[in-house]
Image (cartoon, rainbow, N blue to C red):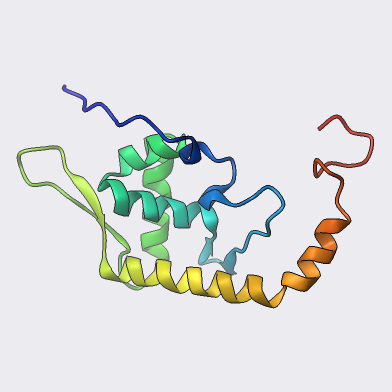
Length: 143
C-alpha cells in the first residue's frame, strides 16, 4: 500500500493547547448531559478535517491515533441531528473526509459562543490569572 508523505508540520501545529490557546488562557467547553462535550480539542479536529480533507492526516497533525480521531468524529456526528463530518470514497483512492455545511455552522457557532463567554469573564479571569504562580503550578513545585 502506498502512503502519501505529509507536509512538514509547522511548530504551531504541535501546540499543547488545542486551538493555539495560551497556557494561561481560559478554555471554554460546552457540555450537555449524556449527549456531548464540545471544546477546543474537538473544534481543532473539525478544523483539521476541513483543512486536510482527511481524518488520518488530521490525526497525524494533532499527534493522535487514527482510531482516536475516527472515534471522536463519530461521537461528534452521533451527538448532532445532522452529520458534521462525512467520509467519502471516489473509487480511485481510499477516500477522505469533509466537513458538511452543518459542521461549519457548528464550528462558527461554537467560536461565537466561546468569544462571548470569554468576553463576559475577561475582567474576572484577569484577576484570577494574576493569582497564579508564574509556571501555573503550586508554589514550591518544580513544574
